[in-house]
Image (cartoon, rainbow, N blue to C red; front, side, top):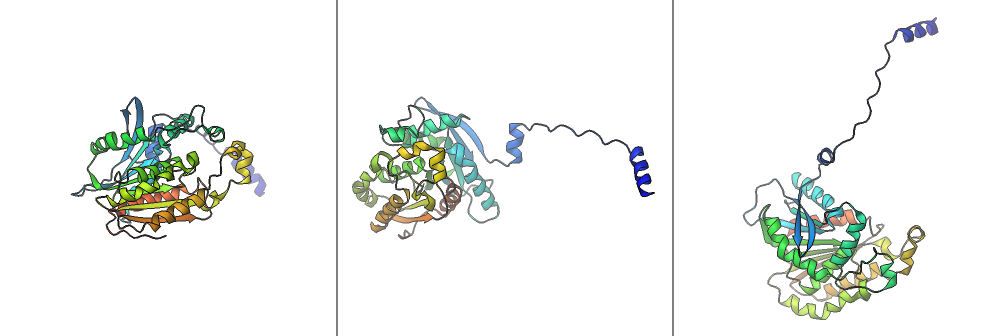
Length: 317
């Protein structure tokens, strides 16, 4: 009897309407629904074009201006830093920070990787093992020109959006970006008030960046205000995993990069300076790789930027 009733009901039921086809979402709608922060402008400098991403807090501008965090590799890192700065400031976990990402006007990852090698490395390389892991022709060595963009052109671009506290600026870079941060720190420590080098590729050109250490002491002593430095590296960067070596065999041709050892030695050296003009914090984030360490380090860089200025330097781990 029950089966007969169910069959009759099924026969009399109205057919279900056809499911509508999934509708594509525009890039603009996607960005808005993901709450992608900020704006972007393309800026030319010495024949090159950079894409500058800018996230300005909705808060009233402080009398002295907002703290500034400049994030290298903006195409990859800006969103994480800006989203964290926006969310945490909204919940009053930290002071508002302007986040600026410096990147390139392209959606081609290969193009970005080639340009970042040029901009972020102080010296050209001829090491075939290193070149095998880069885009063809990406020999590097244009860091000085890129730094002139950051110091000469970028401030006025950011200034067109809001007012910045010039005494409260922070530079963040990862990998080759971390190498650029270390090079800027040692070469011209007055450029920024705070520096965060995430997994810096100090090994580039046989650790040539560290050969500036001798001159750094005098530059540090001459600073008009103290600076703060943070160095961080993933614990799993001590060696390439078997999966990595199988998937990217060219990694075997790299020199001994000593990612963890070099960073801890560099951090220990800076701490040993015991200068009242620098506060140093460095450490190894165990369980993290060269890529997985980035999000946490970006969050810490946002914190660092909001804590500026570094008026009471302390050294230590």
